[in-house]
Length: 336
Ligand code: F0G
View 1 (tube, protein in one colour):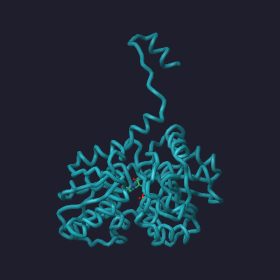
View 2 (cartoon, protein in one colour):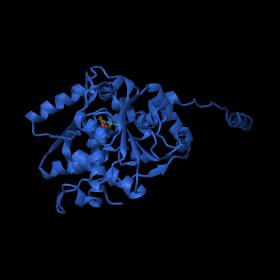
View 3 (cartoon, protein in one colour):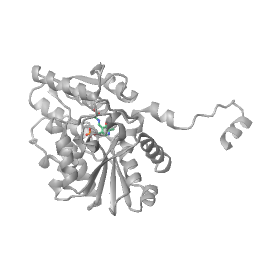
View 4 (cartoon, helix red, strand yellow):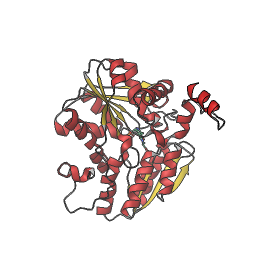
């Protein structure tokens, strides 16, 4: 499959001879979720964005942002990140021959994401502060230095990410509601742009973690906390646009607890066979807590792969069973 810049070029701000930095992103599976459908009494679909090249939806935006940076002659890119943007920026920068620096909150990003950013050769800076502080600092830095900022404040990120909305409508034709986790609020803004370009308007149900829910509270959260480290954000950059999208779609922004996020995370893995990261499960946690609200067909965006965060998984799952190397012991271990 060609990457999304080739598939959707006529809907993106790029010309035929512009440089394309791609890893074949997009075209992710949208799978029916029979168990969830039964639980909420509507037809539920899961958009598996963890199947993008670096394991998250960020690749959709990053192919566009890094391609635009190359087109503009940039030699370096930078982002603040809770992990996935860092991994994606590092990979696309490596692919495009650019240097990359990422600023992440120290000790607060999942191991898989850290391993990716380091392996791709990014300069990884662990900030003694949170994501919101990191974003403020990189914005100030890129005002002073000729480095391209590839956070979702970069408009090319949203252009790329809107293509997920195209794919959902191509497959389902109609959609009544979209459930989506909200952190820095770029992705929900991008989906709304994508739907609007197709002239469709599913209701947008955005979900934040209770300890990091500025949009729900209507005010900044200075010390956001949640097990879903990817959405541990207290002052989203796309705040107004996200609220506008939810209002215009007759949607809602609501909070889910860490316990609800973890319960949805386990249920997705154990009952639907889908392993996503905790932040992604916020979309399903929200659907389970608040219901489909009359929507007959719902898509939940599972933003990142479960392998991104092995520590949380091992913490949540049952332990392994030790066993001696003989048949009786194995039989006992297998049959319980
Ligand atoms: N889900 C995952 C797995 C994420 O990594 C993020 C954001 C979101 C949801 C929320 O998306 O910010 O567009 O509202 N991660 C960013 C990062 C902040 O740095 O990787 P959003």
